Amino acid sequence: MSRSAPTAITCRDVRVRFAAGRDVLCGVDLDVPAGSVVSLVGPSGCGKTTLLRCIAGLQRPTAGAIDPLPEAVAPGTLAYVFQEPALLPWLDAVRNVMLPLDLVGRGTPAERRSAAERWLGEVGFGRDDLAKHPGELSGGMKMRVSLARALVTEPAILLLDEPFAALDDLLRTRLTELLLDLHARHPQTMILVTHNIGEAILVGDEVCAIDRGRVGGRVTVDLPRPRLARARGGTAFGHLYEAVSDMLAEAAR
Amino acid sequence: MSRPRPPLALLAVEAVPAAAVAVAVVAFWHFAVGHWRVPAYLLPSPTQVATALWEKRAALGHAFWVTARAAVAGLAAAAVVGTALAILFSQSRLVRTALYPYVLFLQTVPIVAIAPLLITWSGYGQRTVILVSAIIALFPILSNVTAGLLALDPNHRDLFRLYRAGRWPTLLRLRLPTAMGHLALGLRISCGLAVIGAIVGEFFVGRGSDFPGLGAVMDRWLAMGKTDALIAAVLLSSLLGLVMFAAVNLLTDRLLGKYVQGTGE
Picture 1 (cartoon, rainbow over the protein chains, first blue to last red):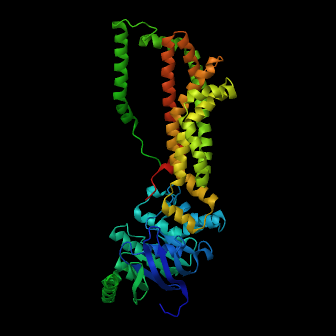
Picture 2 (cartoon, each protein chain N blue to C red):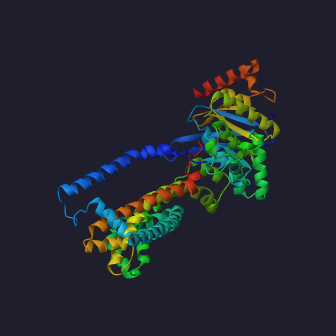
Picture 3 (cartoon, chains in turn yellow, cyan):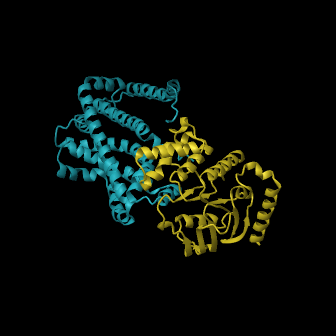
């Protein structure tokens, strides 16, 4: 991704100190060009989820500046995919996906339903499953509903907080490919928080290491798109994997 | 989507031990009354109780119906008032801290102490019986629904914040549905209490009128030394509690079942 592309998200010296006096973010600077994907990798507790929550407006930074200000953008411009599917158990799949449109009051009920059904189709949901409740869906299916729910408002910025961490390897690969496919068809600015270096490289245009509340380094991913999960077997991928691993080791020092 | 139910045959098998205990107790009761020559005013035999049940079936049936109506009305009133108060409590910590001690007062004050007061204010009638029943049934519903309204899944709360849902959409689309499982639990705890409340209410109301509820006829038969009829009425009160519990379970499963399911995680 070219550095000259307009910046969609800018973080300047973002700091977060929790009530107990623990510094979670200690001055993060981050630029995410419009339409690009930045992967944030780092060990547990390094602050990557807190940074994502700050960008989403779910956590107020103690200091620093974030542009766009979450409260300044129209609701639905920012979407967030949680670590768990976080579906409402009393609503069926379609109603869960319609929820953001209901909350922001966009479209007529019929339009909301049709948008929800379309997005469920985009994430590979069969028509027979539309009326199923979360309790009747597998972990992978629930995560697909969660993705469709995030995309239904057609957000300019999609924030993903380790969305596939709880899934097995096979499902994880499938859903990562789905994410790549969705991004190819509906390009939006994305930040992916992950533990998984391979996933970070495969999805990202840039991989940022976060360690102890700071950006510890950046690696640009120049793999051509569209990408498939089997790109992991290539030499270029291997070099990138090594580079990101070295960067993480360096950041941890 | 409902919980898989055990087939009828399995239910029958599960009922066998309980039925065996009942048969054993009745048999021992029958034997003991005859063997130790227990006077009937102290403990009539099971057959005497059964005879009283049959002879007074009209009065008992009517009493059962009157008490059932009052207990259902009391439980319904407690559900409506309890849920409304819980909504109020969930909206502000200040309201919660200001009113909670008084709700605790309602829970801790002995109902037999305030029943005469309630009669003074509300008269010797069904209204007072419903009031006593509702007061006893209120607390479990109120405390459970309040807990449910406040116990949101953090991700769900974040989701609603992300789309800047205001107080009312959050209440209607998230808090209340989340609390429905707690309401079901509260109703299950309270349905037995509502029956107790109705009977206690009728005890007092029956002393100043010819009120026909189970509590009132029990008090009357106690005074007249009709222990056989009194025991028959006690058995019917227990039956009423069981019927209420079964009905509430069935209703909450049907109406609130989808809210009581797991979180889908």
